[in-house]
Amino acid sequence: MGVLWEQLSALRPGWGDLIEIGIVAALVYRLLLLLQKTRAMQMILGVGLLAGVYLMAILVEFTLIRGILETLFQYGAIAALVVFQPELRAALTRLGQSRVFRIFAKLEGREIVDELVEAAGQLSRKGVGAIIALENEVGLGEYAATGSPVQAKVSAELISAIFTPESPLHDGAIIVVGDSITSAGAILPLSQTPLRDKSLGTRHRAALGLAEESDALVIVVSEETSRISVAQAGRMELGVDLERLRRILEGHMPQRAEGFRLLPNAR
Image 1 (tube, one colour):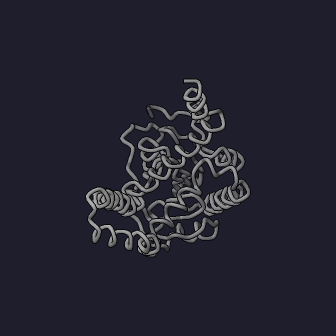
Image 2 (image 1 turned 45 degrees about the horizontal axis):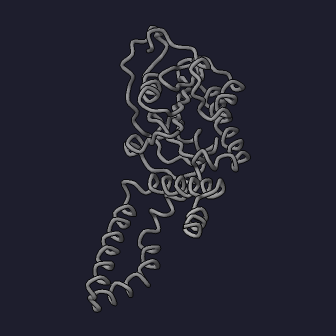
C-alpha cells in the first residue's frame, strides 16, 4: 500500500505543471479561435475523423486500411501546409495582432500612431473629409467586404490619397487591421441616435453607428469644419486636437467611457 501511495503521489501535479497546463490550454484555445469558420477548421475535423477510422482499423485489424492511413498521415502534413497556406498565414497574422503579443510591437505601434496622426492633420488642414475605422477585438470583415480590398501598410500618404476628392473611394471609410489598411470605400452602419449638433453629417453618423455596434475606434475628419472627432463605445469626442488624438491612439482603443464627451442624446 505504501508503494502504491508513493506512485500516486508522484503523479500529483506541482505548481510548475499547473502553470504549464494553463499555458498549453490557453494556446490551444487561442488557436481554435483563430481557426474557427475557416477551411482549416474543417480540415481539423476531417483529420479527427480519419484518426477515428485509423483507431478502428487497429482494433479490428484492418491491415489494408491501416496501411493506407499511415501513408496518408506520413505525407498529409506536408500537403496540408501547401493547400492551407493562405489560412495559416492569416491565422499567424491575427495571432501577431493579439493583445498578448502587442507588447513586443511597441515601436511599430508608435509608427502607426504617427502615420494616423499625420494623416488626420493633413486631411484637416486641407479640409478633406475622411473616416478611418480601427478594428479591435470585434472583427470588421462584414464592413470591409463592402469596400475595395487594399492590403497595404498604414501610411499618411496613402490615406491622404484615398480621401482626395478625385478618388473613387473618398466617400467611404477605410478599415485598418493591425498595421494594414485592408479595405477602402467601405460602407458603415449609420447611427439612429438623434444628434442635435447640425454640423454633424453622414460621416459622423457612420462613425457613431460603427462605435455602437463594435469596439472599433473611428477617426472622423469633417469636410465642412475640418474638425477631427473620435468615436468609440457608442460615444464621440468632438474637436480633438492632434495631441489628444495621439493620446487616444496610444491608449490603443481605451474602454474608459469617461475619456469621451457624450454627445447630446447619444446613448
